[in-house]
Image 1: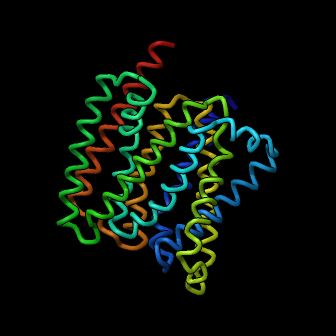
Image 2: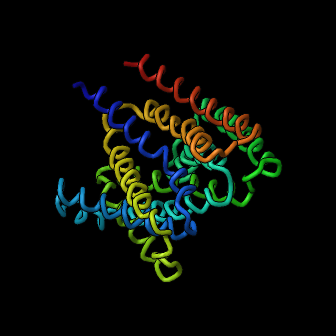
Length: 288
């Protein structure tokens, strides 16, 4: 199997594994912070175990050398992991995933500010289109059942935080940050512990908690490995699958209608990002 095929297969599977993330939050009948606690414990524990089995302790010995950038990555990953279930509990699944899809816009801004990288005309146009889409989503939150601006803002925080983590990781790209993910997840859960009742999960739903954490662990490891073999625009296009499939899954399983504003605004956001990534990919292939 070629590296290209391997990268496509691993990344696609990883994206498909994260699709049910928001649905699990809907199905588990517990407080959002309790769900966030167990999401971090289970997925963080599994990723930690996987790193130790396949790579030993060396990745953890390398983490202190990442300094401030590594600390930012750990904090961003941990905080985003807590805010995601909270966002889903406050607004519609469609609004959450469409807003988080705007992550590349934040990443471009951070790269400009902290890494001194120029923002291309393509990215400027993408940002404008994404802003229009998010404005439509925000307006629709007042008109759509199950949507609310507080959840929309929380989802925006998830995108901003995770983009900050990815930008920080680029400054220490010589070190694999996979080992930092469980540090962020488990650290966030440890901080949440005094403020939640971990045993408040309803009887008969512990298997959902286990599956939720396992899916996130598998997705996190796949998204860390797969993109090493394929260009970032291809990764961006594949990740958009989650933004399309997650609302459809919630619609089919729990009957959550995203509403017309979410569909229109989401289509603008996803369409802009898809076109942007496709253009970047075609230009990259043209240079090969």
